[in-house]
Amino acid sequence: MFPLYDQNSTRTNPYLTYGLIGINVLVFLHEIHLSNEQLEQFINDYAVIPRYLTTNFATAWTTLFTSQFLHGGWLHLMSNMLYLWVFGKSIEDRLGHFKYLIFYLSCGALAALCQYYFMGIYSSIPSLGASGAIAGILGAYIIWFPQARIKSLLFLGFFITMINIPALYLIGLFFVENLLSGFASLSATAKMTGEAGGIAYWAHIGGFIFGMVLAPLLNSLNWDE
Image 1 (cartoon, helix red, strand yellow):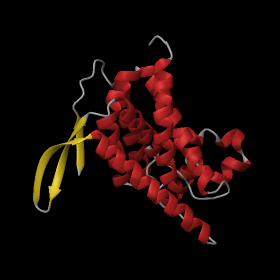
Image 2: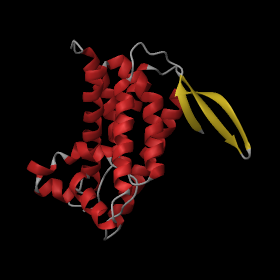
Image 3: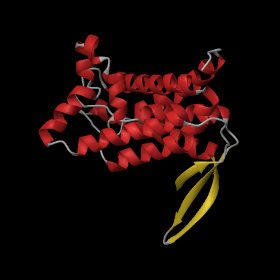
């Protein structure tokens, strides 16, 4: 199943959503032109590395934000940007541009802290990507647009068709899959003597929950754009 776009009409130009997509793409294009040594240093400088955050928080805290613009591959980037494109525009329209930017960066940072806490504060495995922030967008979307339907491509072998899927189904499936995978990864890590890498499931879960909380809170604040 491949979501294409939601069918909510927006009153404002979602230029921040477009801008965030553009920045993520530009940073990734920079990444792929680095040598292996340069890329390793780039990740060390700008991704969240838990043991650095624990031992040197005064300088490493900025990685809670810079890590949101790094990605580990084309699939990682494109899947994140697709969900940002589909769901971000309606949230930007609902919150307004300034509160939307605060919301997006806050969800990403809090999601990274959630991953940091559950997967080990002395781990040396980098955490990066926009997934936590986008999970926050999905959490807000399910609060404000539970009846929305998403135009999606459905692949049935060699046959491809376009159908309308309830947003509640797509986002609920996202959350349940990540919740189950998060508990599985936590259990697996507890049984291993080494460190376990992989997808930052706990960042997804944390971002989703924080998004459900932060969006109504920010929306209630009477800030002029």
